[in-house]
Image (cartoon, rainbow, N blue to C red; front, side):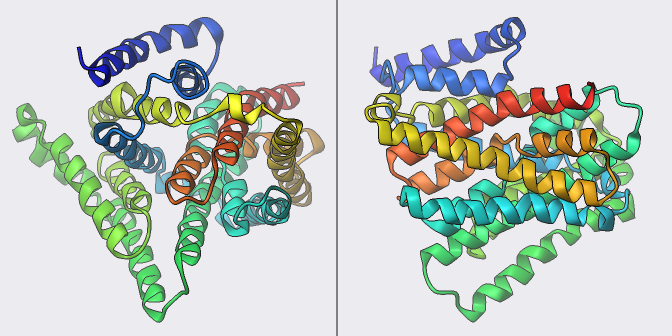
Length: 381
């Protein structure tokens, strides 16, 4: 049997077992997938041939589909709460971590724009389900949490894309036209929500349901907008995210479509992306000397507490009490999907060496495990 075939068989077997492991241990599924990748990869077993074209394709498409699902979780209806009131919180969640990342880049010898962008990210995919689990009597706090995290998620994605473009070379006038074109794409899901396209499309799709027409159209939309995004000079994740926003709006009445798309993503492409990303982490090299360990601790501490401090102060100024503000700060500091996506892009572009890449993955793992638990505990004290 070919080594690659054997590796894929092992990986698919692990993917099927991870949900059971997650339920037993309480670990988020994606965290378990990252850990599985670390065990299978450079750190221990070295079973994943990351340079194989099929591995690269599956990992790349997994990243694109992950961003599509991030867009699928957002609805303009969730932004009905006064956006203006959450802007100070969102700015603090972006600005202080971005500045901290740029400062820390001098110590760890990483690109300042890139590290600042990575530090500014947050995780809607972790926060959204957690907000549904928390039984807190004040809906105002939940509104602040959801709206601010959605805004930070969208803005940090553009900050990352803009930073990557700046890193590649000098900005030309055409780039500003590209920004306007990319921003105009966001009008599509907005118009879809206003025109009630969901009901019209539902009626049309119901006549062709046995062909899975809606799934085919969703994949076509992902690929088309990802290609348009690349053509405009941004990463494909922007286009995929907008595709998710569009499907989220037009499928408001088609709940089964979301379930199908999430099933395809979380059942196949997303686990592959996280496992293949985890396989590139080299813990042996990372823990080979004390300097690496010191830098890792700096990244984790600065990464988490720059968010906590910024969001907590802004929340207090916005009228939330100390407990609510501190809880909001920790929940904003929970990162996973976007920071891993950014680390993967930076690694492929040669902006990160093996050590810094591994440190950013460990930052994502640490914040995903600790921050939500601490935030929830503080709020319910």
